[in-house]
Structures are given as structure tokens and as C-alpha cells.
Length: 113
Length: 114
Image 1 (cartoon, chains in turn cyan, purple):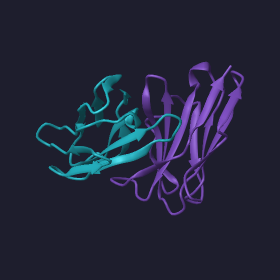
Image 2 (cartoon, chains in turn brown, yellow; image 1 turned 180 degrees about the vertical axis):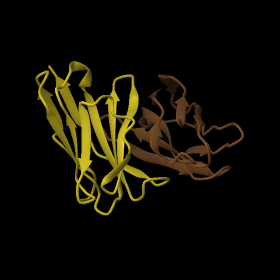
Image 3 (cartoon, chains in turn brown, purple; image 1 turned 135 degrees about the horizontal axis):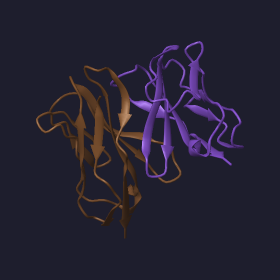
């Protein structure tokens, strides 16, 4: 079945550092891809999404590009802030299998000043 | 309502008891999802509903778990004969359609089995 694999955490960075969180997927067809974020003490919320190959999703300085050739959707930010400390989840839905919405295991990001 | 509402927010139960967890999705959302979040285990997919039907029940961990949705709205997740390994945060989400659209999450129900 379809699946999402993301890098293990935790990721620890200093403020203003460059962030990459890797995400790869296995799916038939053309799923949509998402990044969700869970800030401490809060519920999950959508960060960004891309619905077709080569689309770039962006929000709050974060970006991710849907790469079908490498089945990847890596999350990047040029300069992280302490307030970006959270757990980040890569997810997919759709595709030929009609997968509802499945998530990777999550990556914890901790940013220090 | 304005968002996805789950109740109770916390539940402590004795091993062997049955529990019911409730989810009120955003009005008009056709899809509803249940997940389990355990420490270090990420988000484990349990079941989803398209309207009142559940096309994919493959994620339910055992036959002690069941779920239903009525009127295309409220959903209940029932765990029978709870075990300690059932302790987790149970999350509900809803979306306008069942694929390719943003899902909105509730705050979850923290279940502790003692």
C-alpha cells in the first residue's frame, strides 16, 4: 500500500540556520502531498500542500516541491526561528489506490536562540 | 461548529472497560478520519468515513475497535475491553472531500488505561 517515510528526528538547529526535512513516498497514481505541523500544546494544522508534480507549496517561509521523479517532498526553510520549534508531518492522499490521508512518523524540530 | 470538536478531552479507564470517544466534524465536511498518536509512533491511521460509510477499516488494530458515523456528521470510536496498550491520544479530523483536500484536526482525546 501507499506509504510516507520521513527523516528521523530530533533535528536541533540554531536560529537562522537552514532547515531541510526529508520526505519520500510510495504511491501509485498521482497523490497530493502535504506538510502538517504540530506546535507544542496545539493540534495539527496544515502547513503547505502540492497537488501535482513540480508544484511548489509554500507558507510562512517554508517550501516543498513535489518531485515525482524522486518521489520526494522535502520541506525547506532558509532561516528558522525559535517559534518554528514543532513536530512536522509529511502526508499524502489520493493516488490510484484512493488512499484517504496517511502520515509519516513526524520529525521534531528544536530551534535555539 | 467552528472547528472539529472531540470529547472527552481526557479519559482514564480501568483495563477491561469499554470506552466511547466522540468527534463532531466541521459542518458540511463529507470525510472524517480517526488516528491514534502514541509517543514515538507518529500518526497511526485507524479508519475514515466518506459520508456514513467506512470504505477502509484496515487500520483498526483489532476487533475490539469499532467506529460509526451517523447523519454524515458525528462519529463515535468505541474500544471494547480496553488494554493498557490502547493508551494514546486519539485524533479526529474532517475534510470537505475525502481526498486531496486539507484536513482539520480536533484537539484529541487522551486515553489512559490503568
